Each structure stands twice: as C-alpha cells, then as structure tokens.
Amino acid sequence: MPVSDGPLSLPARLCLVGWDAARPPSGATVRLPGLVRAGALVELARQGLLRDEDGIAVPADPDALAGDAVLDGLLELVHESCPHPWRTWVTLRSRVTLDAVREQLVAGGYLRAEKRRVLGVFPSVEYALGRPAAVEALREEVRQALRGPLPVAALGERDAAVAALAAAAGLFAQEGAAAGRRVGELTERVGQTAPGLGRIVREVRAAVAGAVRAPASL
Image 1 (spheres, helix red, strand yellow):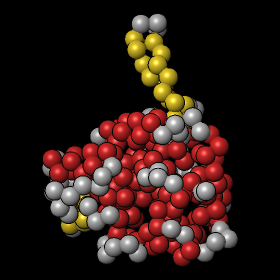
Image 2 (image 1 turned 30 degrees about the vertical axis):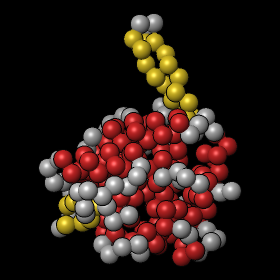
Image 3 (image 1 turned 180 degrees about the vertical axis):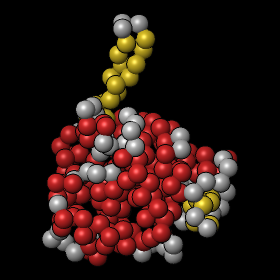
C-alpha cells in the first residue's frame, strides 16, 4: 500500500520527506520546523478550519477541531494569538508544531527517540528514522509527483501539497526544470479544494522558500 494511502498527516509527511536533508551538514539549507508548520497550515486550510481574511490566517470556527493533536494545537495557538499573516505563521513558534509531529511519528514507529546525556550530565533526546524503507517510499512518491509521468490532475490533493511544499524548501532540486514547471500545476491542484486556498498555498510556499535562504539552523 502506498504511504500516501496511510494515516500520515500532511505535516508528518513533510517532516519525514525533509528529515535527512535537515540533518547536519545539510541543515544549513532546509528549515524543518517551517516546512512542517507550512504543512499544518495548508492542512487546516484544506479542511476549512483556517480561512483567509485579507491575508490573515483566521480560525473559521473557534469551537471546531481537526481531531489531530498537531493540527488542534496549532488551531489553539492561532486562536489565542494576535492576528498574523500566513507567512508569519510559517516560522512563528514553529518548533512547537515540529515537536508535536515528532511525538506522533515516534508513536507510529517512523522515528526513534534515543535518550542521551550531553557531557555525561544533561539529559537530551536525539531522533532517528525508525522506518527508513517507508520513508524512502514516501520520497519516491514525491519524486513521481514532481516529474511525472502521472498527470497532476490525477494526483491526490495531499500528495500535490507535499510535493509543492517540499519543492519550495529546496528538496528534490535534482529533478530539474521539469519538476519546476509542474510546481505551479501542483499548487493549483491543491487550491481546488476550497475558494482562496490557492492563494494560501502560494503565500505559505513563499515563506518556506524565504526560510531556506535565511541564515539559521534547525
């Protein structure tokens, strides 16, 4: 069964797709917290739980829940915070979302949490892939979405979103110009879910691309 048919959420998929690229020394180019947060924002917008109001991310219904700890945590954060544009939410306190996604992936066996002590004294947790074959299968699905031959219209909206956001983060750049030409189509495919979603995806993608260029580390 393809990974895309499984229970993994959009932010969880993006976390796994970008995992190795976000490890040192590659971490200088991939910002995993922002990429994962971008996936959570798009997923909430796809489900109609976040809406766009003049470029601002606004909860559509303060009482509505996604039924997912990661998404509901972000919904609560947006609801309790001052209004912010979509681009701001891609990076604002994005580690909170990454931490929640990692917990889910550990529970699902996709990641392993290994307890260590820094300098033999300070407790620390390091994470490693627990199901590398499943993760590689997911990455291959993204490669296929970016280069074809399957028409973009035949892809699921979530698969299209993973590919479009991963491309914005600089992942799969080796797929070349053909992948670059399909990114616009992938973005439009995601935007078919609801009115205004295409604009949201474009805003979020721009923020992810900007974070890649910023001098920061994971």
